[in-house]
Length: 143
Image 1: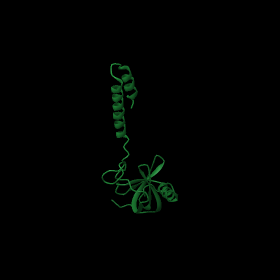
Image 2: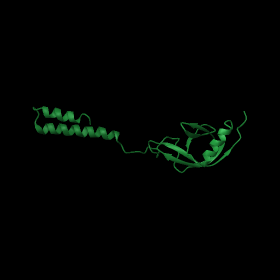
Image 3: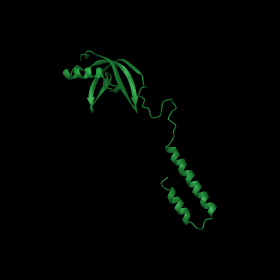
Image 4: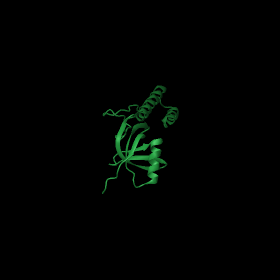
């Protein structure tokens, strides 16, 4: 689209071409530029698997219930994250009273940081957030 004004200026200066040929070339240039521009603006957001194209495979749907997830909590960039004991799932945690109790317990004893949590997942952008409903401390497995 950036070159469109230059095409029109060039076509205006070519005086040896008859006007109908100039307009045909200009129309062809516009159609080609629109075709190239529309390729980058595709509105198809679904893939062959039925999932939206921008969705990561690890992202969960809004409203998914998490029950009995054994996880640890950590603070990064003034936000708390919840990582499963296996380390395969990580969620940012929404602040509420349950998270406050967890952070207070972690502050008093940082070594005992294994929890069994339940909650509901929410989505914002391409991130999942966990809204905690219940949390109980679990014993750390001995090595």
